Length: 144
Image (cartoon, rainbow, N blue to C red; front, side, top):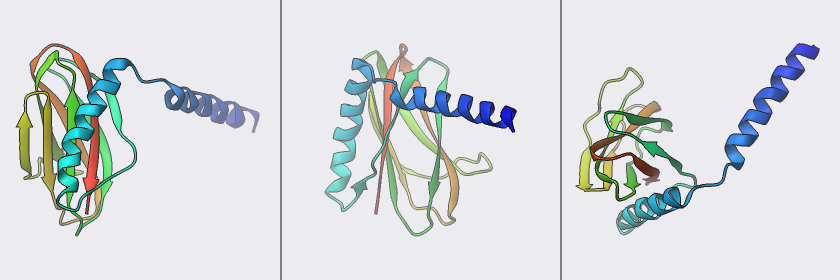
C-alpha cells in the first residue's frame, strides 16, 4: 500500500510539473500562428477546442499527438511554427497507423489538415518539419 501511494505521488508530481511548465516566448509565437490559421475555419462554423499542444520540432523528426475523435464530426488540425521552421506539414493517422485522407493547407510555417472520421476512436496527428531548422510549434484543433 505504501509503495502504491509513493508511485501515485511520483506520477502526480510529474504530471503537475508538466502542467505547470510555462510556455516559452517562441511557443507563444507558434500558438498565435496556429490560432490565426484556426480562426479562418471559424468562418465555416468550426469551434476551436480548448487546449493546445506546444513543443519543439526538429529536422527529420515529427511530433505525434493522440486525439479521440467522433464519427460524424468534422475536424481541422491547425499548426503554427516559428520562423526557423520554413515549412511544416500536418498529417492524420488512424489507430492502426494508416494515414487517412485529408484536405490540406500549407503556407510555410502554417499548415492544417481537415477530415471527417467514419469511425470514432483514437487518431494520431503528426506535425512534421519539412524544411528549415529546429523551432517551436503549436497545434490546435477545430470541430463542428
